[in-house]
Length: 252
Length: 265
Image 1 (cartoon, rainbow over the protein chains, first blue to last red):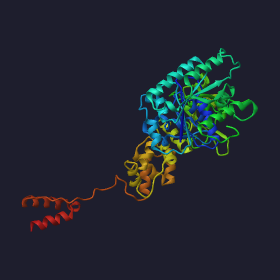
Image 2: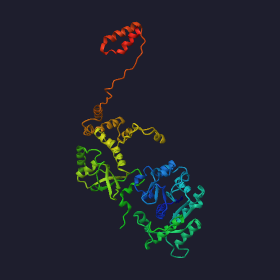
Image 3: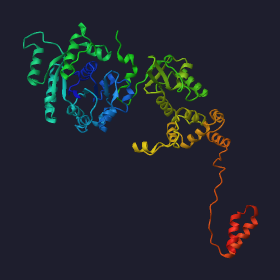
C-alpha cells in the first residue's frame, strides 16, 4: 500500500480537493483506495461519508487511540474507496506519539493499493503522524509569497523532525502559465522564487486554475476528457500516474 | 443545472464533526409513518390535544425535532420514516402546520432504529406494563437450549460474563430482568397476554395466572421442605416434648414422635 499525504502548513492550498480528486481517479482506474481524514475540518469525510452517523464510533481518532485501523474503516459513498473518517476527538490527540499511524499501518496488511491522507493546515503531531506514515508528501501551493514562506517552513520542519524530507514534493496548484517570457513578469518572478527554493522537490506537473474543481467536489460533476474539462482531467491523470496509478479512465 | 450535494442530500450536513446536530425544516407531507415505529407507543389523546393546541398557538418548537431515518429502500425509492416523534408529527398535522423540524439519523436496519426509539422513549416515560409487554414482543430474543445463558465459549472468547438474554432485553427497555422473565411467561398464553396488553392485568398478575393455569406452583404457594433437626435432650425434657407432640395430635409429626419414643426405651 502506497501512502500519500496531502499536507501544508498554509490553509486553502487545495489539499482536500486534490486528495479527493486523485483518490477518485485511482478508484475509477480500479485501484483499492483508503482515504484518511486527519483534519477536524473534515472536508474529505463530508465528501465521502455515505451516512454521517457512521463515523460516530468508527473513525480515525478511535483508530489512533486503539491502534486498530481495520476495525475503524467504514465504507464511503464512492465505489472502490473506504474511509477513516475525521472525528472531533482528534483535538485530544494533537500531542499523541508521532509514529502511531506508521506503526499501525506497518503492523497490518490492509487491502488497499493507495492510502490518501488529508491533513489539517498546521504542523502538530497529527500531521507528523501522516508524514511519518507516508511514502510521498505533497504540499500544494498557489504561487504567492505566503505559500512560498509556508512551504519553506514546512520543508525545514520535515527535515528537522522526520526522516521524510526526501519524500516531500511541492505541487503548483491553481496554476496559470506565464503569458510573457519577461523575467520581470509577476508570474515568472514567483516561479523563479519557488524553483530557487525548492528545486528538485517541485512535481513535474501542475494543476490548472479551474472552477471545475469546485463543481466536481460540490456537485459531483464528473471530470472527463471533454474539451472544456481536458486540462484538469490531464492534470489529475498525471498526478495519479506520478503516484502509481497508470490506468486511464473515462470519467472520475 | 447541477445541484450541490448538500441540496440533494441535506443529511450530509450531519457530517459537521461537532456535537451540534443540524436540524431541518421539512414538509410534514414528506414524512412517512409505519410500524414498528408508529405503533411503538399508543398516542395518548390528551397529550396529543395539548401538544396540538400548543402548536396552533406557537408553531413548531425547533427544540423538539422529529427523528427521521432517511434511507434508500431496496426498490430505489427514498423513505423518510419517523423513528421518534410520531405524536409530535400527528400534532403538527392536526394543527395544520406545513413544516416540521426534523433531525436525520441513519441506521442499518429496522431493528437498530427500533432500539434507538425505545431508548429515547424509555427515559422520557414511565412505562406501563401494557407498554412493556408490547416492547418485549418487539425486541426480546430469548435463546433456547441453555436456559437463557450465552454459551461459555463465546463469553470467554469476548472476556465477559455470560449475560442472560432477559437481562439484555431489560437493558434495552429499561426495566428489570425479572419483569422480562415474567413477560415471557405471559406471552406463552395469548389470551392472558392480550389482557396484559389491554392494561387489564399487570405482568406479574398475568404470569401468576399463566402458571396457575399450567398447574405450576407459584412461589407464594410453595411450602418449605422439612429439614431434619437433631436435639440433645435430657430424659425429662424428651418426655415433656413427647407429651406436647401427642397433645397436638393430628398436626404432630409422626416421625418425630416415633423417634422420641424409640430413644426413651
